Amino acid sequence: MKKLSVLVVMLLGLIALQTNAQLIISVTGGNPLSVGPGTAGFEFQVGAQPLTLATFGVLDEFNDGVLSSSHTVGLWDVSAQNLVAKTVVAPGSATLVNGFFYANLLTPVTLFAGHTYRLAVQYSDIDLDLARGNVPQGGVSANSDITIKDAYLSSGSGFDYPNLNVSGANLGFFGPNAGFTPVPEPAWAGAITAGALAAWAAIRRWKARQAAGAAAAA
Image 1 (tube, helix red, strand yellow):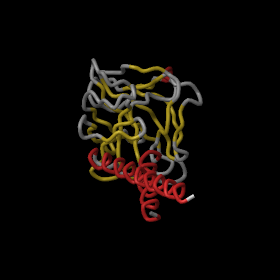
Image 2 (cartoon, one colour; image 1 turned 120 degrees about the horizontal axis):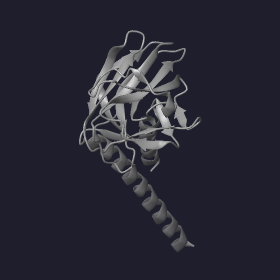
Image 3 (cartoon, helix red, strand yellow; image 1 turned 120 degrees about the vertical axis):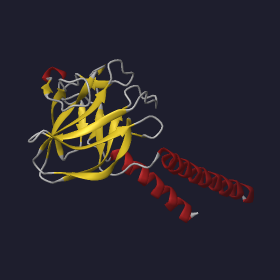
Image 4 (cartoon, one colour; image 1 turned 180 degrees about the horizontal axis):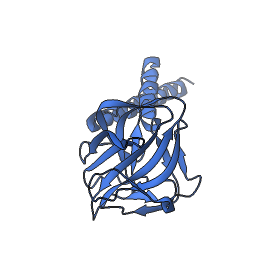
């Protein structure tokens, strides 16, 4: 039974790792916004240490586990306005982690210390997946290795460099996110969760039998 307890701790630890290793940890306040057609997101600056990103995500604004359409998420280096990495987050293949649907990059990308980047996601004209904007000061909990800056939109209607500063939206459009470790495929994520719950249930049953045996012997 001791081995089973260790297994549960390891499984729950893996789930916690996938939950917390994100640029944006949580967003409180603000409003759900339809920001298409175009590409919307936020600017941020990397701190004193380089960062490696392995996965990009799209906000589950309604917390209903439903991603209505596919979205291209991109990361640009502001100094040269060049696209550093991109991926498509699609229904059915994305993994839901802590309020964001994630898809892994083909190759993890390293961000330079002190550099400024823009992370943004493309939305269609009539999009059921919304971003969050107008977030008040203190409403964003971000990884301590980055500093969040302004909101940005693209002047074009497709997947384009977000070149328009929309400071009135405060602190960014929080539709996109990024993670430091690859997420498991949806089937694997379900298996991890199911395995942890099954192991926990087994421990509870074993403890109940032990308690019943002790009561009968009394």
